[in-house]
Length: 399
Length: 185
Image (cartoon, rainbow over all chains, first blue to last red; front, side, top):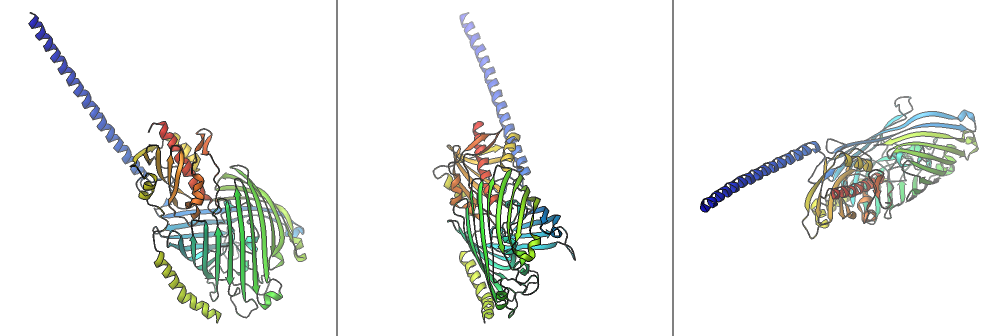
């Protein structure tokens, strides 16, 4: 009897063991199936992500945070600014009360490969261009850059000259004031572009340099615009190229917040016409920008020295300008500034002292609303009636 | 005479000088560091594993707040070994993406390198005189109040957008490190 009971118990135990073993196998199988499903789902999720990110992830484990390309190698950008000027002159006939979409600019850039790129800037000035209209359509940049090494590049085509603060970086969200400073208009005729080639170098110390040969000025030597540098720009539009010019710049940015640069330019004949009393000219420009937290100080000095009997007889062989501009970025949204300038150009309209102060509201780092008050005092009696006080309002953007 | 000399110089000497320079120093432009070099510098003694962090809606909001633009990425992959992680992210400065490599030890920046720079201006951001400012930087703030670095990063005139790109990517990396730790990844 006891033996039968033992046998029965063993039998029951064996059966239970078999059931448990079968259940365990079944659970393991289920887990395995689920794991396979998880793996498959993970694969599907990754494949979906791959598909959705196609074109944005261009190499393994390199994540692109923003897509903005047209195609894969071409990019578009731009900037613009609209101004309202309300200026009361000493002689009310010279009052200014106008609204102007001053600049509408589109950038097109293309990366041919890792070494060769193209950059361009197409601008419509004053909104409306054409015969008898106030504006112009201009190509301000169109050049190919070939990087010869990590420290050296050559640019060929139509490029902005490496001179001053605004000439290369003139997007309106990067400077205070509704209007650009006057020194970098009358003395350094920004935006100033020429056709030619330049070498651009930099190194780890923060030192960089430019050396370029390019087309030159064609300044008037008579009439109301005689010897005005700004009126001498040919804008690479069927430009007379009998006399080339050279521009060299050395710049140091090795200390974060500090930017110091000096440019020298030589014009072998600024009027592009021999024997007219304007023989040659040289520009020296130096500037400094120091930023410490929210505070920034900009200062720029530029000086032309021309030679020739006519320019010396007119008393404008030397033309210079200086400005200083402290600013304070109060917070992410607001910034205030003041700017004092002295311009001593070729004609009475380019000889004045100016003061501006105002504020900028950064709705976005690349969308700014500006306001400033301005006072300009012409130093020549003949222009006294044009001296003014007033205010300006503007909106500027870049993308 | 001077005109003739200038013309001769331009027609004969300048092209030869430019050709000579090009031949002498021809190399890869803009690519300052390959991914393999960057990882070797980040993990000299170990083989890192690749991990992925998914960008859910909450994370996307923070990233967009940091970068001030929409973020399209669905996930960010990174390398990790011990407490050290390495990240490679593309962020546009002005026109073109800058490829930025960031290494963090724990929650502090250990190394930052510009691997590829494609823009015409702003090249200064690749040099140590600028990137050294980020070393040791940590994230402060909260998702609700906004996050930022624990220090001031001095900018470079004319390179503001490139500077912003590096600062933004650094903040993104430190935020994602916080998030990955929260998940126990």
